[in-house]
Image: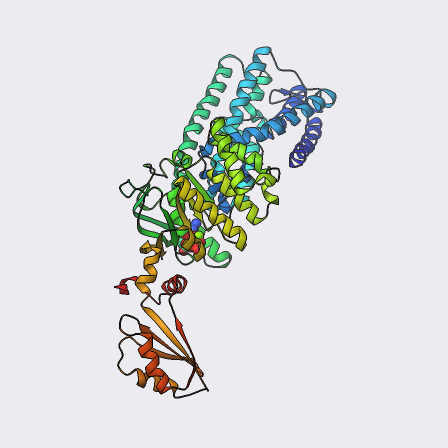
Length: 244
Length: 346
Ligand SMILES: Nc1ncnc2c1ncn2[C@@H]1O[C@H](COP(=O)(O)OP(=O)(O)OP(=O)(O)O)[C@@H](O)[C@H]1O
Ligand SMILES: [Mg+2]
């Protein structure tokens, strides 16, 4: 039920954006190097991808921390971070499959989505997408960990969603962002969630650019991997399990 | 129980302090806290020394907020101590949480360890996978627990639809599925009816006696403690105030008795008369809780009830006499209330 609702919301957003960009492109042929064909594809795929790891993992994790339900997870012989990543993956498989079908149907019927730039682009897109998925799940894990200290989950949740949707390039492609924001978005790991896979898909990055993008993607992945492990140990030391 | 064995649970100077944010009420307080956070130090557990041998069953008692649950959390490794050492099964629980979790079972009375939305039977299967139990071990263990706890009818029900007593039985099974040598129970019988409670105790006793399970139990129900545990550890304000046999508590404080006298009619001067009659009997103190009642507490090592009654019966018009023997319950209550102090016991 929640799943369907999420997907519905996503598609309402996609339609709104579609209408806005349609109007913008009626004046010119290309904006910041994106043609209308590419932009349509970008909008639809960006939302589909960003919806993959929803806020539900985060809200569940924060909930267990706030109420002390986390004892259940901690008294089991499981690595906590792996459990959270597995939960994220589990939910994404369900939501992802439904989204994928909808995207394919809508994409071909209504949006006239472009195919990947080349078979190589398609393969690298899949790789980048997977890495982006782990990056997002790790970011959400890190943000949720803050709950150990603040115990205030609502604020964290909203902030997290807004920041991710801008800096990942879901709202607009990085190339269209104003100066400073663009620089920030380009170096941060969040671009790896949406922007990097889509740039590859659309063939916007070639040769060394492409290699650089992937290097940045996997560099961040490694950093986040070690950082989240360290942060969890830190949080665990500070944890004050709630409730008697 | 092998008294030469090394302890299976050992704590030395175990201490946990919590930081509790101090916020003044209202927006102003919240804003001030944001810029200059102030914290109060809450002592939950302070310098606890414990040594539990394999196969022992220990009752961990103490008034509300004494630090029982916190100790259990420290022993299960889900909480990191502020200072002190803990060793369980030779491991430091909070440093080897995952490894430690394989070798312990935990039941928290107030919360379930089962998955809320999936049928109990599925939960067990998942737990079997999580604990990586070989197929035969799982089947044997599962079969036995189902049998002893009579869970067959509950296997297809999701945890959220279980009654408290049913849920508790399932939780017990879940905590023992991987056959841990240690079981921690934190207020396991809270809210259970008398017959479910009795069956619960029977089951724990069986696992303890027949399987050598080491049990550590916190409870406010003295029945649990008397029926299940040979040893009692009492904690108050985070510190251990008693550690020894439960029966010893009654012998240790058992000298304190009381004689209750019912008078024929309300008598203003009864207390004075009683005190005069008692004269200088050491350790005997008279009170008059009601106009028609006089109570005398005395030390049975100094005086006998017979002597007291002889003295009092001549001085007062008495219709009825009741001699109060101390029970474990009354002693523990008075220990909680600070009426009795362990140091005075000798
Ligand atoms: N997460 C926490 N943050 C701050 N203080 C806490 C926290 N958890 C427990 N405390 C405090 O630590 C003390 C011990 O609590 P604990 O839950 O161990 O008591 P208990 O002996 O289990 O009591 P009860 O019989 O009521 O269950 C209490 O004063 C409690 O207020
Ligand atoms: Mg408690």
